[in-house]
Length: 226
Picture 1 (cartoon, rainbow, N blue to C red):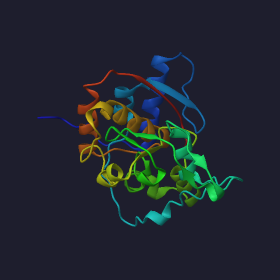
Picture 2 (picture 1 turned 90 degrees about the vertical axis):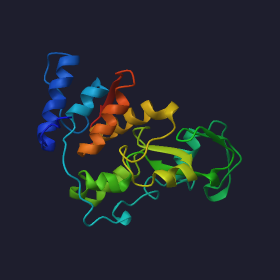
Picture 3 (picture 1 turned 90 degrees about the horizontal axis):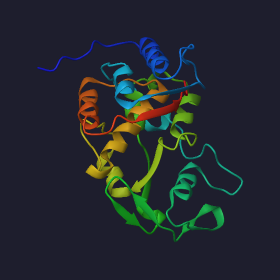
């Protein structure tokens, strides 16, 4: 029988992250505030996340204003910027940031795609999942920043529309990508949740622990967003 850890508050979890950072870096005071950088092995980072029940009460997608934030002078929104940055072969950019041509790799299902229309830009930790695990208590501005996060390349990923819709708002206990990308996916999921101080539920933690047990215990580095 697998014993689960008792739920911790987000504040307590942050203290655990600080202790882990101190043990793997220096004896100086550990960073524990927005803007500070934390480096620690991914399995330790998973253990540091608070374990709590989730609630979707009150969630609607429009509570995370997305794609319009970060609109640039060239007319490109967040979605288009991610598509441009992740292209294997750069597309042509036409008026109003219409992208033509180009080539992309969809890591979720190990496919190459030759049109921006065949791709979605996915929030690796879905908006609904973020809401369930802490974002319900954020301000509208904080949720907008999360939904358009281009500061950490793990937050948003260009993938095939079909794989994104198969994933939907599921966490790793209900959906995982193709096996060749699974270690990276689980690692990035933990990094994103650490960056934003989000919790995991029991089944999610178990699935991540199982996935990461088959992977190298790579260190992750995150800059705390909140």
